[in-house]
Length: 514
Picture (tube, rainbow, N blue to C red):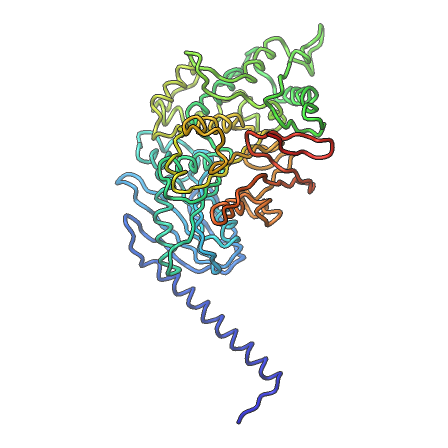
């Protein structure tokens, strides 16, 4: 009988574990490589290979040249032919350690870039994650001109086929289907998530849709009109134009008038709707020529800080949030040029006229865009009844300092859903969290990190502080988030309230009150 010493036994156990681990690694490598032979409807697997993270990998397309892969995973690149004239390129990242969850990702802007940041983030939390180029390469809208099917991919179809085919790839690799399906994105991606709940309610069990660009045509029309208020597309000699340096003066005055409305002077306006900014406070006195506003510039600001109404008096878009002008990206609207997203959308998708110069852009143009509604992109429909009935959960958030999409846009959508479904409160399946001091999707002086996108946003790895984990708890455990706790750049925290609750300072901290 062979008797081994303790040291020898431990060495053998360690060697055995290494052998098993190596066999598992080889199995994963082989299983991944075999996916190139997978046959799926209208789909071609372009490549499939195992990646041992952390490492940077090269990426296709014009958006970026490489991406970080933090976890070890199977990377699958594929293309889905949605019609004879359109196709969606996508990637599935399948982590070695998988918790049985599927994660679909959206896009930003005019939506032609794979979201590699959140492919990495999702797989770091053990989701099988899939992202696509939304049907075209790059952020230019010129691809929509005379290409209606490419536009349809962008407007509603790409995320759906990404989910359908992505789930089949997941099942083929792991040998079992996903347990639950989730979605995470912001801005254009927030609109895509909302569109999914409306058009394809079976695709996702839980949706996190931040700062959604819903009411899309009117929203981009509003963006164009407020640029027109200050002289776009050519501000030369226009008395209403406000130079960039004066916006710093305006931002300071907005805070002077409204920062203290919430009880704390901290550079954050908790409820911009309470701020009735009076620009006359910085009108130029006799002989004053710097650091002040002319009468024409004050008139322009009054137009900017009010809602936009249509030719028949109907509300088209919420007003620009006071406090937002402090962010440098606000110059995208006030530089004297038309915002590039709005410029491309109206020229290439709505008007099909690449030479349109916006000199005659007005309310009638916006209303024309609403009527044409290319690809049914508007995404301003309150009928989420099917998504609700199947048990779907929807978590959305919006920064109150969003320089691109007014936070009132998300309030309007909430109220529209409430009215459509005859539900005074949507808490059972839909929750909107308003984030004081947050810019567009991320950043700003507030407590703006709460797991909404990218590994860096996951400051506290708990569902109380992370919206992606919160939606998992809601879907799988029935635990709905009462508040979301954000963390600021300096480590400060704040509980963010769900609409229509209000964030109120009680003398020491902000609390949520009905």
